[in-house]
Amino acid sequence: MASRRRNDKRRDGELRPVRITPGFLGAADGSCLIEIGRTRVICTASISEELPRWRMGEQAGWLTAEYGMLPASTHQRKSRPTIKPDGRLVEIQRLIGRSLRSVVNFERLGPRTVYLDCDVLEADGGTRTASITGGQVALSIAAGRAVRDGRFRSGAVGGIVAAVSVGMLDGRAVLDLDYGEDSRAEVDMNVVMTNAGKYVEVQGASEARPFGDEDLQAMLRLARGGIRKLLSRQRQAIADGLKKI
Image 1 (cartoon, helix red, strand yellow):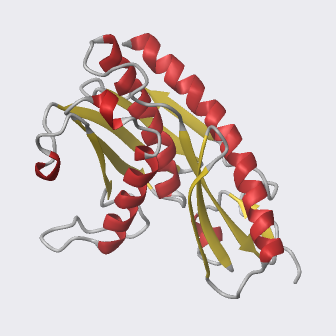
Image 2 (cartoon, one colour; image 1 turned 45 degrees about the vertical axis):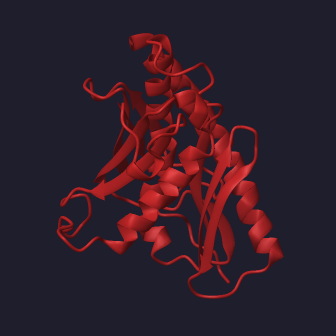
Image 3 (cartoon, helix red, strand yellow; image 1 turned 180 degrees about the horizontal axis):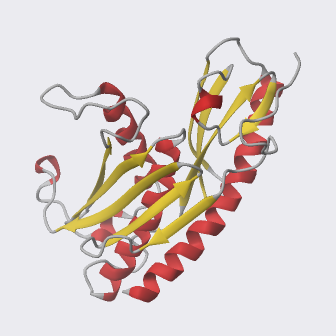
């Protein structure tokens, strides 16, 4: 199959420009604005001194995530969820929660809940992976503040996770798809990994044709390389954010 140039002339294994602004909202325990290409997400972490009802009486804490898209975040206005939950949003917030819980030591939180909120300002592909990557920054800043204040024990957050999209586009593996690429990709996949190089989640599906082991390994190689770069950006943003508290 003849290859096409990517929409923004990037190389196949190249991330879009990444910018993470820590401390974006002053009222939150931890926050950042993450921008990956034209995708922009505000991530906040808020610590509550209460536990979910099903965990009441325990000394271990919990983390839960919520995800939403502002009405003008997409090309066509997106309605706000009302009584009926949006299935896609629920699935994404569960993914975010699972991803961030993988690096949390709940006993070191004590009987508290961390609420992670990810609000999409503008969507151009990769909003769920940007939410995980930015959510980690907000969480780590909030945890650093809580340890300083004696609310969390040291090591409450024991690692870092980041996430990126990969796919098969015109028969070749590509990293960090924007909306135009994602809409015509033959395979779409999201990869979540820790700073220890361990997979937390791999979500992938054929959109146009089945894919083989060679395609899968090519996508995972790109994902690992992209996540290493995102982890570096996260560490710098977390360090900058902790200086401000």
